[in-house]
Image (cartoon, rainbow, N blue to C red; front, side, top):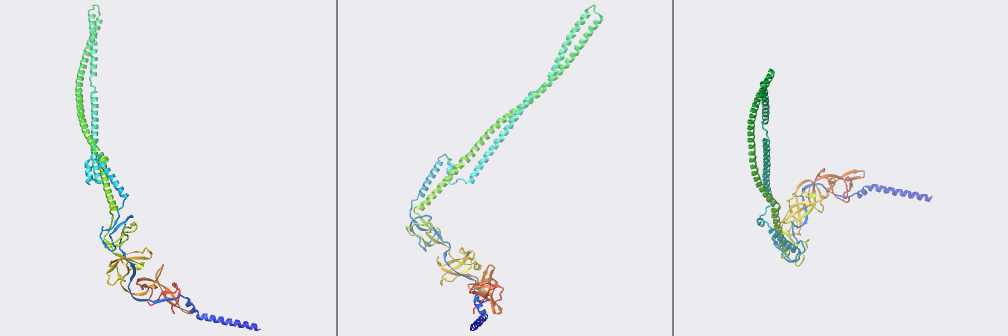
Length: 547
């Protein structure tokens, strides 16, 4: 019984403790939750003026130092230049010890070879005018050579054209002579109309002779019949008729012979006339042949002269192209090679005999990096010169946003300059910072006045002050992929009390200086803006304010 009573007491006590704890947790829940939230520092948005100055510190560097280098290892004989000396261009900076050189020996040997080759070309039969022209520095240019070649080629082509024209003229004339001779042959072969009439006359004469014989026979028969006493009247009649017929036939043939004789005589006369005309034609043709033969001789003589002129001009052209111009060009090139080799020898003598290192520019000696007896290093400048008028520079790295507030030519203030020092700084250029090219830029200042390389300077540069209605601390301005923004504190009521929330407001930065930023956005000017927090916070997150 006692044991049950003790158990009930324990349960009652446990319930009382549990209820008490729950009551305390409920009462202090707001306080506990507040202590778990990130604590933020805030500041009211204000208005006022901002001077958009950018400040940075950099080391003075030579604006464009000139490194004097000896591009081989040489022992230093003596040093003239001292740090701080003002030197003029070509002033001696240091002396180098003489040195035997295979390079100089080879250059001298090459010069001897070139001179021997040149002398051999001169005595090889070159026209003395070529030698004088080349040695007098009057060797034609490539364009002049081309003009000479073109002129010689034109003369040769003109001469060849005349030769070809005469050859064609000669061929035409010989063809004409052949045509005339053929015409003469045709004229000489002509047959005149006499043979037919002569043949007809001979036939008529033969017939007449036969008729006369027949008449003689008829006459003899007639005489015989008439003498014969016993002849009958019929025989006498027949004999008389035969004599009459024979006499008529003789008479007819005599008329035929007379006609044929006249025809023959006419044919002879016509033939003689035609022959005379043909002979005249043949003589005219022969005269033309003789005239053209004289022309052929004249053309051949003229052709021989023109051919000789062409051959001479062709030789001039060939000699010019194949001999004279190449010889002149080779001689000029060889003389040029000799001059270049002499310059090379002179340079090598200056380099290895009594060599000095001189100032390539006028300016001030910044450093001397060798001592007498030391050997130079091609990778290390022996002397560094600050050229006249090049000045000095200081570079400071700034954000890209800061760089937008500066322009080339803007003057800068020297923050840590000595009192009374005469130094001036001007923005010379703005370029990406090689150490952080995506976010930063380098502002290069040109420094003039009393300044030395290696000196540290703090510079301030930017726009003049301006009034703005909305200004927040620089630490209040945040940025993400969506742009710049601020977080303001908004108060919200709850059953457990007031709660504070970080609310995002997108803004545009108008200006800024070392501590403040002028903004433009959906704010009214009385908001509390979050500047710092004990933990990273985001928009919409609960926060707590300092007690």
